[in-house]
Image 1 (cartoon, one colour):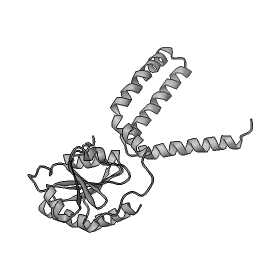
Image 2 (image 1 turned 45 degrees about the vertical axis):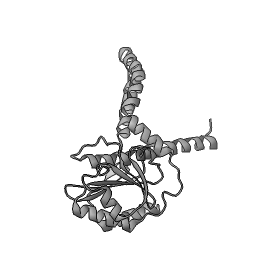
Image 3 (image 1 turned 90 degrees about the vertical axis):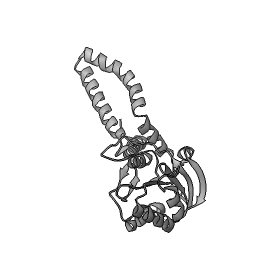
Image 4 (image 1 turned 135 degrees about the vertical axis):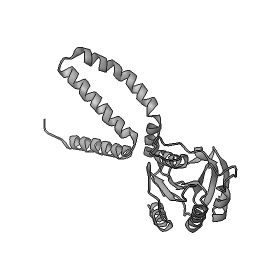
Length: 237
C-alpha cells in the first residue's frame, strides 16, 4: 500500500508531539519515569514473544496497579507537566522595576539577609500568594529590606513580584526533592521553578550569595551584573 500525504502528516505530527513531550520532561524525574516504563514494556513484550506465560501474566497484572502507584508517586511532576502545557503563550510579564530590585538584592546580600523572590511570568502564582500576605505594593529596595529583615513575621517566606509590584510576601513555595546539600530556601526556589516558569532569586543568609532558579535548575552564585543581564534577557523573551 503506497504511502499517502496523510500518512506522512500523521508521522510528522506524532514525531512533533513526542519531541515536545520530551522537551517538557527534560531535566525532571518524569524523564526517569518514562525510561523505566519503556524498559518495563520491552521486558513484557519479550516475555510474551518468547512464550514465558508466568512472567507475562505477572507483568500484565502488575501494570494496572503500577499505573495508579506511578500517578501517586509522580503527582508533582505530572502536575508540573500539565501546567507547562497549559501556559499561555502571550507576553510574559509587565516591565519590572529592575534597578530597584537589584539595589534591594545588593543590600540584602551585603547584610546577609536570607531572601527568596519569585518573578511571575506566564504561570499565575496566585495559589502560592494565597499562602502569605497580599501586599500589592510598589517595588522598592527599602521595602525588600523591610520584608526580609530577620525576625519580622514575613522574612522566612517567599515574595512574589508581579510586574513592578511586590504582590505578596511570606508565601510558602513547594520544596524540591533535590537535596545536594541545599537549604530550605534553595529547595523552595528549585521547587517553584519546577512547577512554573517563574524566575526565582535566592539570597543566602550564610554567605550572601545570589543564585537564580529557572526550569528546575539552580545557577551558581551570580554577580549583580550577570543577574541584570539574565533578567533582561528572560523578560524580553
